[in-house]
Length: 93
Image (tube, rainbow, N blue to C red; front, side):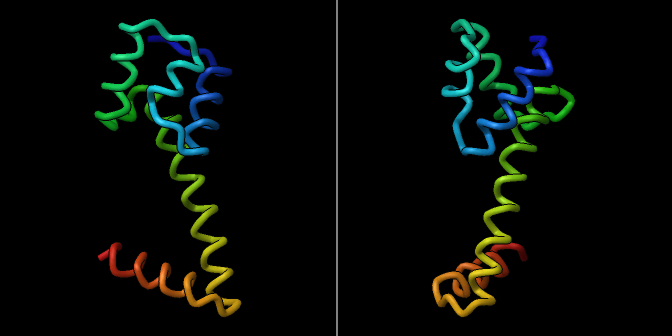
């Protein structure tokens, strides 16, 4: 599939809001065959497909922003945020 730059930006934006491939496909008005192919490509995590790269970039960028906010909250003394940061540390090993 060939997506326009505008569509790739929409994929990135929606992925950054943690929408799944099916919801993004609906928003892009993909037909059933295109939706299935899009979902398969997303599941493959093969970044040679621009749409997959846009999807993964959107999700990762949002996760970075969230983790920075949690880190700041932890540094400000939030016990739940401190625990979440410890969980991130454990999970990253």
